[in-house]
Image (cartoon, rainbow, N blue to C red; front, side, top):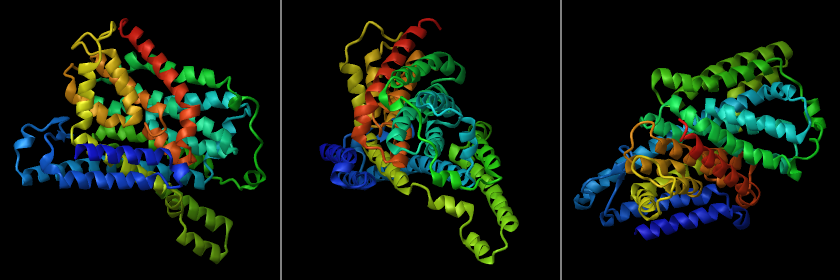
Length: 465
């Protein structure tokens, strides 16, 4: 049964990668493989020798000897746990996307466009690279990618050029998220699990993460895609009336998103709660400003009636990429199925046992650097969350051991090597309809070079601190 479930995952994964060839949207195979995987688990629950308890990051003791009802109870509890964790991400994502769309409703991104005076493709590449790197550390790599690609869509009108920028934003956002406890979901897991502390995370990972971003950007700046200047604004864009509230809504919206980590730190509630509060506050001002705009600028009753049915919030919600949300649901719950059977846990354990110890071993436990690097590569292929969850149960090193910092780096930045290997990549894929194989051919090698360069820097810096 385990073999069949793995096969379903592989076939579904394959269908996602070749969606442009088979003309089936990626969300369909993601949802199908999720549903079939869990159905097979339910039907074959008595045949599984082990079960991974995600809440406690370890295998359930004596699972094989449990009765059918107890095993079904474990499955239901685990399914509910994963749905809850996935829903946290999806609700957070919905909130962030809605705030971004509300900002766009008031043409707020024109304020940022006003700051970017240059038309040089190379300079814009570096501006967005540093914005992604530092913004992702503050508001997390997922939200930073949404915000920056939204700005990019207002600045770069040629999609063939824009997807190059989007590809490199993914690399920069994942690199920036690795050195902050709130920058990436896997780093947050290690932080909440008391494996790393904020100060040590910055000391160990800032330089490797920066190198991971700088090297690909340096190489890309010499590539044909970033030579010359951007095309001038289109007539449609030039004619678009600017809202007098555009800059206010931009600062309010971004301020709301930035406040989410602070809210989390103060209340210890999950980030999506803070995001919903931020959305509520932004929505209040959006409705007030929108009513004000209509009452001042227009006395036409028909237009006012139209506004009553199409408020800024309703309009913004209608523009959200719902297929991306459903794709997230499918892919995360499908990976959760593999994790629950202990397959990913076993995979990580097998790596530890079979890989040769290299000369550059970590001091406590003798875990090979190659194992951690392969976890990074694995996070691009599968998903970094269950791999980090498996490592939490596998390794017993104490708080701030360099092993945890290396895992945070590898899992956080390794996902850039494939577009569906990170949350930032999946969102970019949805927003820009980026082809899996285009990314594999054009961007993956840059991400790999950056990943390895940063790893070398980490191996050097850990000997100093």
